[in-house]
Length: 200
Image 1 (cartoon, rainbow, N blue to C red):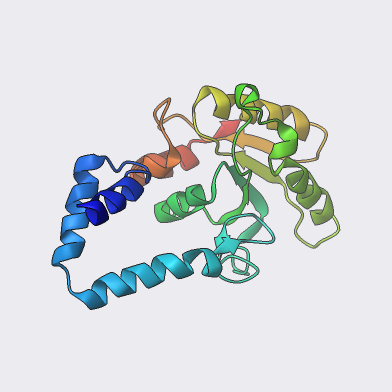
Image 2 (image 1 turned 30 degrees about the horizontal axis):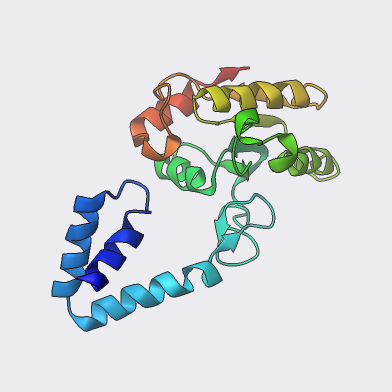
């Protein structure tokens, strides 16, 4: 049936969804009531119009600033640098970190043509420098890129770049598996990684 095959074809483009899972989803939607299917379609349709990037840190937000940047109780002297917006959500779930974030929008990957100019690095430096004129300057930058070759390369590049700035540079401690993504790390592993971070 063409309608089912078309839906399955679209669903398999989602990460982690193979043909069997896509078929199960399609059949589940066929069995569900029409109101659910329409609500799901509407949520998908409005997702891109509702969610955008935070003007300050680059995380997902529904207004100009995300919930973290607009929270005045956060420790503004520390910034955690992550690869993607979903990493912010993952770290927040650990309830271990109370500082701000900065989303790079990827990692350095020369083979894929991703250099420093393609990442949100310039804005990080600008945030650090402009914070000196505030009552709470940024004193520590926690590099929380994934423990992959690209993530480590990006971390080393940032460390070298930040040597010129009056900030302490730290890296998440071991505990996150090499080759793994922050998105899939459990809360305890993340909490231990934050508690055990060291100078980098």
